Image (cartoon, rainbow, N blue to C red; front, top):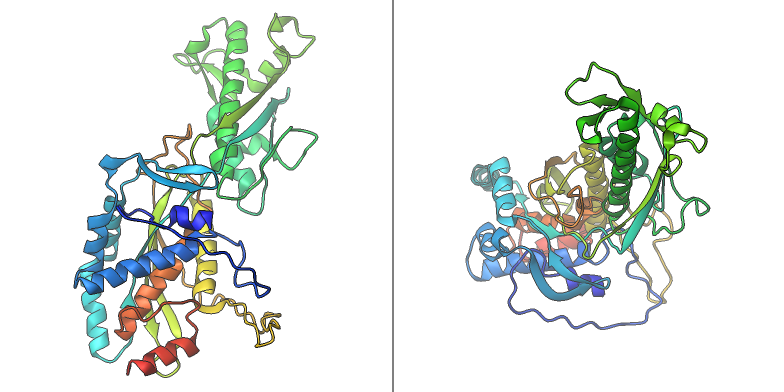
Length: 445
């Protein structure tokens, strides 16, 4: 309830907003925490409401959204709302510019004309739009330890967790870039409670935001210590040195004398006379603290075709725009979006807990609990931008774990309405063929 009420207004400037929560005890679970809990549902509600307002005002739905979006000049935009103990404060984002980028990418007016021509020829086709607003980087803190051995190999230990999202790769990339070495020389450890004091894990799109920032902070400390030791070894001021591919070089004379990170680590060994009064080992531990979550944002635009006889829905094309702040690994982020979209399509068109009149669950196997297969899933077109890095993280990172699912229901509902020519037709999910066929029959489609 807290997540839903705190994020429901999204990117829009709502001067009047009140949320009242009603709690019910039930043994027939309608839903559970999955991915983007509280935002998948409220984005559907909010974007359905925006479409309804556009119809009531006889206004273009894109123009309505553009008029009510929070502007870049209003950032950071504060709301008197709370999400998971954190007051809602939008960090930099240009929602209007992203909407315009999407319209240009899709050639919106031309696309609408093409779809109208197809509808005039009897096809039930339509395009939908839903804008979404995410929260990511649940605090308050995360830590990291880094140790460089005498071979130059680097071990990173974190309190984060890998759940298949590419955690190790992202942490290695951040560490490598911050130190100045090859990420393939880095081993990332996690889930080791005997190695690090505290860890929150991977949820709430927090791993890269919190753990990644901690790794960056620790890696910069390693770099500082390495350059300080190397300044003695090379008889050159630390500010005149650089680290390239794990080798400390003189900035103005890269072909001159060098030392490797392994040699620096050897010089910092407890028994090394070169160490002087420096702390032993090329190692560091740092913690990153965040005051507010970050708020990435995006939009979904699907094109669907509805079967007039069965109510079946085919997704012909799907577009996602997402501003990530800074993309550490764009390919992995796109993978997150594709996976999230598959779940969003499942929740919008297929998945449902069903019970009989006695409360007995009927969706107990995958024969009864339907999920999309590759046949139903489009390959989305993705516009990933880094136009507005977060001011709350040192690398400008925002989370990417839930963007693929959040806008799916609202966007697909909008497209289905357009396809069958019945504004406001879809008011609940999942939109199964049976339900859609009834809507069509009731409206003479």
